[in-house]
Amino acid sequence: MTVARLSGSPECKEPMMPESLLSPAGYPPETLVTSEEALQALYGTPVQAATVKELDRLTPEYRRLIEASPFVALATSGPGGLDCSPRGDAGQVVFVEDERTLLLPDRRGNNRIDSLRNVIHTPAIGLLFLIPGSGTTLRVNGQAAVCIDPALLARFAVEGKEPRSVLVIRIETVFFQCARAVVRSALWDEASRVDPATLPTPGQILTVTSRMAAQAVIDGDAYDRAWPERAQATLW
Image (cartoon, rainbow, N blue to C red):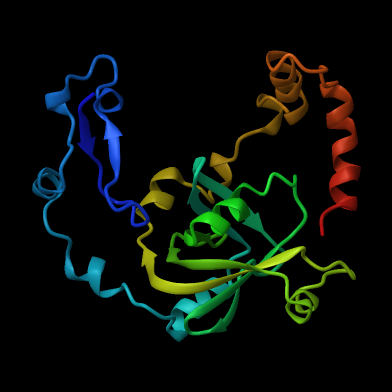
């Protein structure tokens, strides 16, 4: 089987992708961009503002953006592939230890530990911070470790409950992302809000997926009814 190189995975010395995956139905191989040279020719050279903003440490301005963000998307990779997981907290979600170090308490969740398992195998991570009401987002790439130091866990206790672990993140690159994506999506506009009643509920999804997995079928209605109380009791 022939293979095509795919760039952009720092933890892999020779990242490869089967050629069959680069030829989805209906798109001839010659219409797909498979080299950095072709990609650069297509998009051109980034302007100064797109490159000069990238640093290897926090400035006071970047620190203020992190401290204003209650939500971050955490991207990791590992033996099972890629993962992107939401993280949220009251006030701020990630804490600044110093200009090169961030701390991310791991609050209670579903115990899948996809992100943490990946970090154990491959410390490289990416963070994307969102700030409600702001078009500016912040991106951080770096190396992470899962820490259970008792004093560190105690620092981030909420309502007497400590996180099970804290991600200690060493910053390699940090830069803000321009507001175009947020503006195009009208993400924070009231008129763009979707009525949850028009969407499938978690319980409805679980009923379908548990049946597809040939396991005991989950009672979706019961799951949805119990969720608000269960979430409140296990928030921290």
